[in-house]
Amino acid sequence: MKINMPVTTNEYVLTDTDTIVSTTDLKGNLTSINRDFLRISGFTEAELIGTNHNIVRHPDMPPAAFEDLWNTVKAGRPWTGIVKNRCKNGDYYWVEANVTPLRENGQVVGYMSVRNKPTRAQIDAASALYSQWNQGNFPKAPLPARIRKGLVDLPVNQKLLAAFALPFLSLVLLAAILKLGLDASYLLPALLIGLAGVVFGYQFLSGMLIKPLQDTARHLRTVSEGNLNVHFDMSRNDEVGQVLQALRSVQIKLGYDMNETRKTAEETTRIKVALDNVSTNVMMADTDLNIIYMNKSIVQMLSNVEADLKKVLPNFNVSTLMGTNIDGFHKNPSHQRNLLGTFTSTYSTQIKVAGLTFRLNANPVIDAKGVRLGAVVEWDNITEQLAAQERERQLAEENLRVRIALDNVSTGVMISDNERNIIYVNKAVVKTLAGAEADIRKQLPNFSASTLVGTNIDGFHKDPSHQARMLSTFTNPYTANLVVGGRNLRVTANPVINAQGERLGAVAEWIDRTSEVAVENEIARVVESARKPLPPATSDDGEWEEF
Image (cartoon, rainbow, N blue to C red; front, top):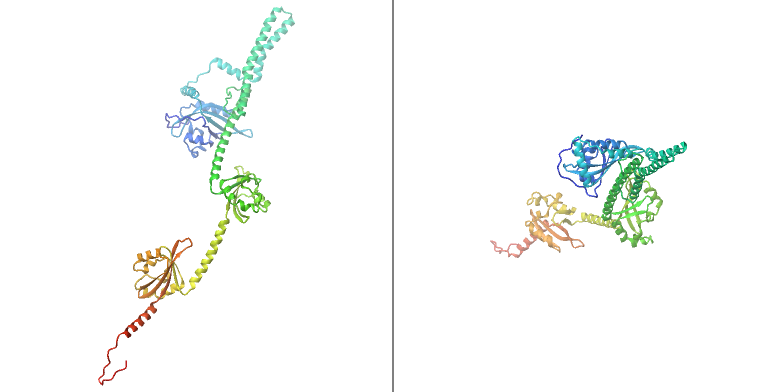
């Protein structure tokens, strides 16, 4: 027998609502488990699925108990017993285990076990019994109990024979007395034998058949009310016992199904609550395309456009959409019906209603058996999104026209962002600065007119911090004259501010005034020279020389 170690003395006590459910194949390997099994045992699903159920067997459990279990279920009968199991960490827990064969097409294909909390009296009795078994002591039931067990296990026809034996014997005696003409004194004993037989037969049949059948009928009424907490007598092996065993199997299976239904309902509730609160607009329809679910988001979205939709769908009402058919949203409902009745993967489309555009992403809802249950559709009102895209397209075209114009004007234009990084230069400014490149490099050796975009304009200034402060706050045109490498450059800057008042950067017009300044300087020199008086002219012969 598998010995699982280590073990502790810590008991995990199940609650009244705990239900441990598992199924195994014919060899006892786990094929399914529920959350209570995982939580109480401490094992993970990966550790349990495919592993033999004896992974939770406690060393205190005697082999004879499991031998009885397997002999019973392999005979096609359900088994009920008190079992001590081991947690992964060595702790232990007691369960009332109910095991029944699983059948498909009349063949046993596996076993199901449903375990609940036992009473403390059941635990104490089982613990004492298992302690004796582990010591090799298998006490027999008292003789009266063994006799009663033998009578209980008699087939029904033999019970009936036993019940009617004495009354029949009495009738035979009476017939013999009358036939043989015996003394009348013999009649009384025969009658007493018959009366005793009737009383015995009634009591016998009442205890062996009538009362168990009445109990069974009462238990079935209890089960029909949804209460599975009833006890069927599993100790008898006659025809009544076989019925009770079958009912016990049904009881165990119903318990499992109810547990699975409850689990599914809980999962469905969690999913619904999650869907109710997601921002995605979700709608579900059944196979007839009737709306069966809408989350809060889609209700809000459709409520916002209800007035617009009523212009073309006068009867449209968000509050009464549930139960209506989605055909009303389509010009050609038959096309949508054919598509939604056969599609197997995501289907995306757009519909236009009352000047509104909706994008729909539909997915089929298909269960594990491949049965189509309906469709789930995500709705997105993209009307404003399309309008924004159109505005962006128009703005992009406008910006493109502006850029083309700037690229070809004769004035040199440069644009920088708020960090004074150059993000645009037109052909004219590149030409201007390329013409002065050799002179500028005398002061800025790394200057290159062809790689201006991405560089920072701080490099053009002796005091970048002053320029940074000025460009971050100026609101009107600002003109500055720069001398770089002997070149005279005039820069006229304007702030770039959008309609919301946000500063986006600056635009600068560049002009190379080196030649112009040279001419201005020459003119100034000539003028200055003209202002000075000429020295008197002298000659040896005393005549004036011409100027």
